[in-house]
Length: 71
Image (cartoon, rainbow, N blue to C red; front, side):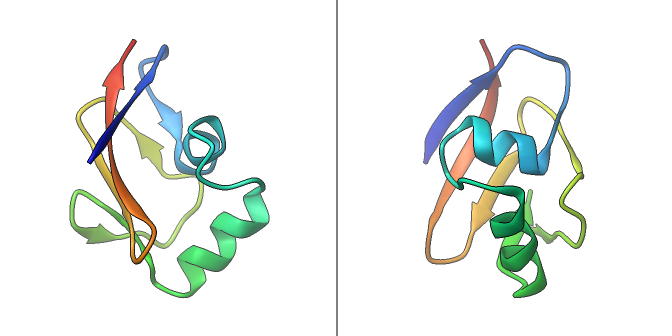
């Protein structure tokens, strides 16, 4: 699991995935969510603007798993 630091108290899921270089556009996030492939702390996510906090674990099925940390 890779750790990715953010320099804000929270960040939106779509922004985090772009910041981390995991996806290139918000449209990609939408498709991954619609396919039921995105999880935060083990819970399936249905909104791309979900707030992410340091300590959260983001997982995209068959792509990877990342832990959010502070910079």
